[in-house]
Image (cartoon, rainbow, N blue to C red; front, top):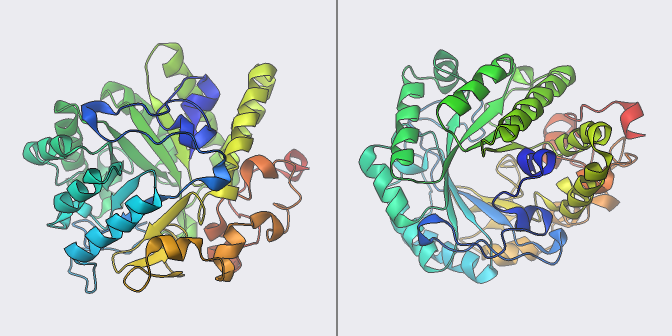
Amino acid sequence: MIDITRLYCDRDTPADSLRYGHGHQGKKEMGGAPRIPRQPKSAAERRPVVAWNISRTCNLKCVHCYTDSEAKKYEGELSTEEGKALIDDLAAFGIPALLFSGGEPLMRQDLFELVAHAISLGIRPTLSTNGTLITGEVARRIKDLGFTYVGVSLDGIDEINDTFRGKEGAFQKAMAGFRNLKQVSQRVGLRLTLTRHNYQDLHGIFDFIEAEGIDRACFYHLVYSGRGKESDDLTHEETRDALDIILERTKDMNDRGLEKDILTVDNHVDGIYLYMKLLAEDPERAESVMNLLKWNGGGLYSSGVGFGDIDFQGNVHPDQFWMHYSFGNVRERPFSEIWMDTSDPLMAGLKDRRSHIHGRCAGCKWFDACGGALRVRADLVYGEPWAPDPACYLSDEEIS
């Protein structure tokens, strides 16, 4: 993640200690939830934030769904007891947070039982949901249980979102869910995937964020897994334009005293682009930002190091987009053992990317801060995880 608010606007935000090595250490979340983990010694030594796709079943059918989910039952999901055993291992391993995802996680009947078990062991739980199933009663249960954060996915306003989600009325239901969460003072934000179909309405989306009192929004770059298609992605020129809008609108809101946490996800090049903008505006602050980016390391310490995924059947992946490759299954070996086993060539490479990445990424002067960005995107496009990330939108002149 690239925290636009923290880096571009110089305002502290939650999880700074994990992301950039300082800030918000040990701070208590609202509602008495588990504490934010203390600062790791280095980004390379971080335990992974783990996304667990607890179910593949979903009540929607999104056009870019990375799990290719729909409204049907899938066989082989981890049982409640297997899930609790997994959580026991994750807690002992010291992971900083567990993201309950799907499919649609709220379609799994034992979700709250599993979350309660995680909280009892000191794990910070977050929820990734389409929001359409969050009634007032569900929102109160989410709040009372102790979720540290809920991310509600949207892909545009009104009919744009409904087209992406494959269901008429999905936008209104998602917003009702969002408002129900706000009503009970649950920390909640929006998750949006940038595509050619919605990026031209970015100003409208920011107007919507402000009008609805949305405190946090994550803008995801498209990854071509599941139903995600390369043809729906932005061109490099469009990506730069989108980042210009995100930077401009984030700074404007911050300058007006509106405390919004705006982030971009799945393309560490955004940090370099932000730095270059800041270099022309405030060179002294730009140097400080570069130090933060280098501490984080970008892709160097992301998938396979600081982030991991467990799918609905218990298979362990470098991230949620890499489901075509498994390091092993938690039914056979604990996650902690699988994660630290570098006998797998991909795992070994992800933990030592500098020795493997080639092409323009390897020769890039920003490598220490970007780290070659998202390796799974290179693997999906070129069939080779160490090739350059095709989503890098910087010119040869800018990286040389």
